[in-house]
Length: 407
Image (cartoon, rainbow, N blue to C red; front, side):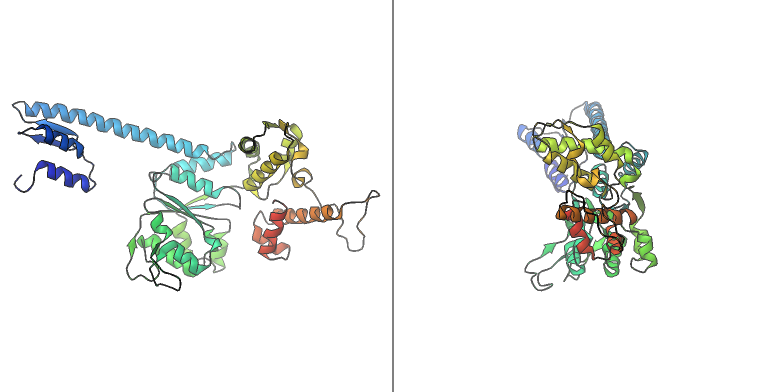
């Protein structure tokens, strides 16, 4: 080796990121050289002798066994992580098991995934399960809600910007695509993006490059994209509100999560999971549901899906007596216990009937509000924007009333 020593070659190999097995063979052994070689990452230090070939066969054989064990351990670890990831998705219904099977199948790939389903069904949980069961699990999982930002702000969040790109851009900032490098980027509510933003995202998916605001050159990105929506994208395509080419690019692998009312077998295990979770958090002794409470939980339509169920169980635990060990019917929210038609007539020719003992006006009005919100959600199939339209109110007002009543 006329231009560098074996030690120098080893150092350059390791600095370049190459992880191949490195055997250092020398005819002039010294203790210092051996220590330096091992410190720099040499796998074996072999001294030349008359039996060099035989010794190399033994050394290489041992290294091959080590490589085989390392690969087997890695395979087993990946399999364990896949099992752990899907175990976080709770449910025993056939529909939930079908979703889990899709997660197991698509996780090892790098294909773009589109997760659809109503609000509160657990779309981000499924996205995280796919990431945790993939080869990218050691890298970042970055999530952003596309509906939470106006277009200009969303663009700067996704792609980043250079200093001076706009007023207030006092320093360079990396975008979320760069932050998720070699990992997974989850674009929640992608149906809320504008057509112009869809064009920019389509370009990223096609070319795997981004351009920061104010920049003149592209930056390569290595990101797996998972998107989600609670809207009917094909309907938006037909209305001209969602680009058809972007739809087909983002829905390479579609995963649909059914609403909770279509998989009622999952209500029991989910309710018990949340009960144990919040009992531990609040230091309560609650361990089970009585028959009436469980029947009410399973009979209710859950327009807010799993998120609404979790909120209801958290509320029941918080309001339970300190010494209670079982969740009873009276612990559950009123809209679960008394789901049904509003207690007052809507006939304009009749007066509201007041009972002899009187009533609490505020509670009665609150109950009517809650029932109308729930009824509108049922008719709208759980889609909140449609429910707001049915009640002839703005989406912001609908969200206010839904939050007020814990829906």
